[in-house]
Image (tube, rainbow, N blue to C red; front, side, top):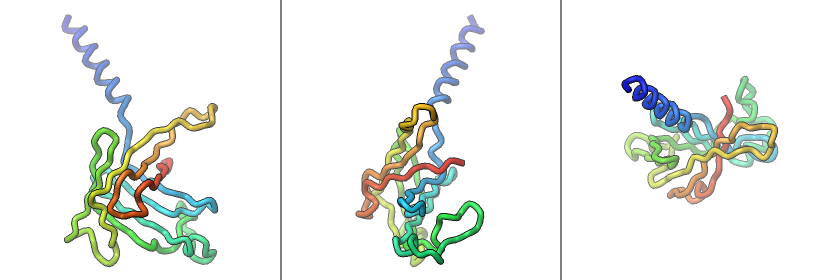
Length: 154
């Protein structure tokens, strides 16, 4: 009886672990030309960093960083923000401390911003890996409402 109970507990633990997903990571919106327009980094420690790049920078041929892994990023973000994030039932809540997170380098205030984490299957039936996305549902930053970012593959 004791062994059966242990097996049942282990199986339920494995099932609950298999349903979890890693929300932390890098999310981006890429333009049709292949340049990054928005980049959100959700760090495992509960902090985040957001950069948005202007269209002028994206289209300027001499403004790109050419270091490995950053080929598609313009030289400087046009506007940035940072703060803390937390997740509850696939909803990500963002907070920004006005005293420590907002300054001339990071003017975006993400308070009252929330997004939904989604794992969507791809349209290509031969590729079974789900595409992780983050869609902003609400924000005090008007142009972030409805923004959808795809998770970068490690």
